[in-house]
Image (cartoon, rainbow, N blue to C red):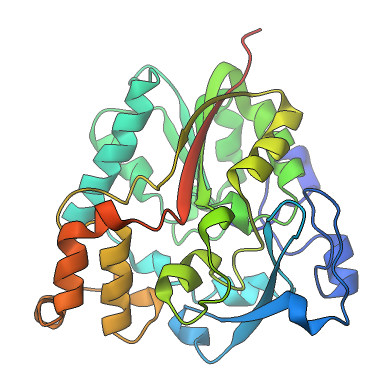
Length: 319
């Protein structure tokens, strides 16, 4: 869930690209090449880090005035920040099984079956892969060098390709050079194969509300390097020649099930201090039930979505 390495001709995940390392800050939009003036402080906004270990830190972001893509200005040592990333604590509990059933259903709608191969690129601790394997999908693989599981850190997993389906969920926004990643994934994708890209939607993120988890969660500094609009993501993907198949204006985990929606979880997070970590820890039921706002969003949050996430499906041309 970070930028890619050029070694071994395989998509790896490492620190920032060479230009950013030299500049220490990102002033140029990688989508449209628009620049901001580094001396103009009015173009940047401070956002707090939503990971507990770094909650006393903030980082600058800016929005491209041309394509509306959001960029994290500050270049950091991502290895250091990922060393205390809370997702490693997550377990395949009932709420995850419910939301993964929705993701599974989306894949099935586009032909996914147990005979197909799938790569979950940026899989963290591989929970979705585990979910699918429990249901007989033996040709599912995951890769993430920051995974807490040695199996998913092994780059030889990528040699199982070509894959019929590639899932890029909450990953491309962590990538310094998305063009390089997409080009290398194209080599791993079978002709006629599908790519599912889930990522925050910059078009619906308010940079003037850095105080709300509804917005500082999708901005997620310093981990999210570039956050795209639907149009800017399509422009990146178009370079691969993939066909645009479907656009969803929310993430698969934003469900109509009671309390399993983005706004409810954001409110729960606010109740427990504001850190992203609480989502991966045992649920404090009684604390949650004392909040009328949490109860309200638990029931109605799906229909009051701010649509700060999106999913786009693409297909590679058949040979």
